[in-house]
Structures are given as C-alpha cells and as structure tokens.
Length: 338
Image (cartoon, rainbow, N blue to C red):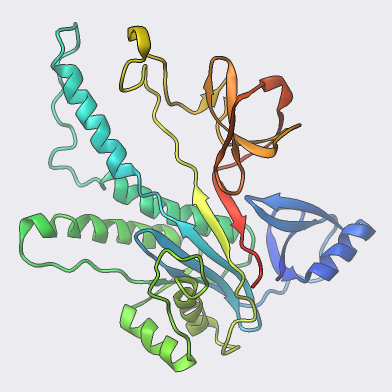
C-alpha cells in the first residue's frame, strides 16, 4: 500500500510508503488528511523534488460495478471498485406515474406544458448519471495522483435494425463521446477493445471471475490493471491487489408529501437534501454510534447511517449530540487484506 502525497497547493505528488509517511507526520514535515475516504499526507513545506513517474488509470466500465486501477511501471497504487448509480431510471418512472395520477384528480392545477424534451438531443438522465459518475471518480483520482493518461475499455451497443432495440444505441454513443471529451481535458485518453483486453490478460496469465458483482480484484480491476499496464509497461504482475469499494449516496427529490397518505389522511414531507438544517451525507461523530452520516429526518430527530455499509443505525438522534466532521458524497470501504 502507498499513501498519496499532496503539496501545500493541493497538487498531487508521487505517493510514498506508509513508514515514510509516519516519519513525516511525527517530525512535522507533513500533516495527515483524508480526501473522500482515502488517507493521504499534505506537505507543510516545499518538496525536495517534483519529478513524477508516468501514472495511468485503467477503467473497466460495467452495468452494476466498474473497476479503476492506478498503475505506474513500478507499483500499483490503488484498485478501486465502484458501484454504478442504477436507480435513476426507476426514480424517473415513478415520478412520471405519480405526475399522471395527480393530473386525473379534481383539484385546481396548471395546464400541462408541452413536452420540451421532444425531438431534443439530450442524454437520458440514467445514461447521463452513469457517465457523470465516472467523470467524478476520475477527477477525484486526479487530485490524489499525478495521472498522465486514462485507458478506457470501449463499450459499444449492438444494433439489430429493430427500433425497440436500437433506441438505446444512440444514448450510449453520445454519452461515451461526451465522457471522452471531458476526460481529455484532464489527461490523455486511450481506448481498448474488449478482445484486445482479453488477449493481453491471457498473455499475462490472469483469469477473470464470472461473478461480476463479487468484490474481488479479479472481477473488474484485473481488466483495468491490464489496460493501465498497456500504457505504462513495467511489472508483469501487480504488487498490490487490495480493493477499495466506493458506493454513491442515493438522494430522493424533495416532495411535498410521500406517495401514500399515513393514518388519518396526513401526508408527511419527504426527500430533499437538508435534515434540520444539516446537509444530508454529512459525516458526524455521535457519542453512542460513533462516525455516521446524516440521512433523513422525522419528528425533529435525525436518521444516522453507518459510514461504511450505509445501514441505518437510528432514527432518533438529536442534532445537539452530533458533531459535524465532513460532507460525504459517497461511501468508501477498505476490504481486508487477504
């Protein structure tokens, strides 16, 4: 394992070993800090050298999970397995159904507007959310390591000539082109076809598991490492196969009331991004539950969730008992070393 290093101006430098990082912290040369769930050190003075080695990131996209590997010719610095935001399509379908239900009620309401998205070339929200999530993770990695290139496995939709099937072809191609253009503003971008990744994986003697949702290095990070190796070269096998799992936090749109009325015909408010004035996703320190992040609110109390698994710990936390630490946008879990 290696520790990312940043200078006083938040610019990434070459990572260092944990032993050296501890010496820097004890001597006052560096200050420990966390950047979105990854431990790193910030130098308190000018670094002795700013020369960096070529570092590449391999990206293996997937429908449920995807892999990222930060690799140089000498070391493998990080293996990241991220969950995809797969709930957007269902949320939009539910919103459309509820809107149509409200229009049938005998209540005063505005006249429906024309469909402003008709015949427009905008990306579907579900597709856009997936590619934006990939770009957010790439920008996060750029703040930790001096990355020079991204190598992405090029995904393609298979067309059959049938309109119902080919309808999802264009959004995939448009979203991919947008992602490559935005990623090119950060660093050089290379692509690899699936068959090329498999050939290189077989040459290096790696095997890929068929369990796509398994939290293993051989599920997605093996292809990501192979693609990064194709750009930087060096070692024929990774010296680090530890896995860090990232899950985006799911937020619900603000609604005036829940979908179904409660007892007595009362409808309680639901959704939004604030809970008693606190931004949802804020990491807090509770005297009983320890580190947890803020979820929803009910009857003047906060809902707290575990920072690693997202499991709800309580719905009756007092705001005065919570000490705010940091705003989170995703959950990070470090799997135990095998």
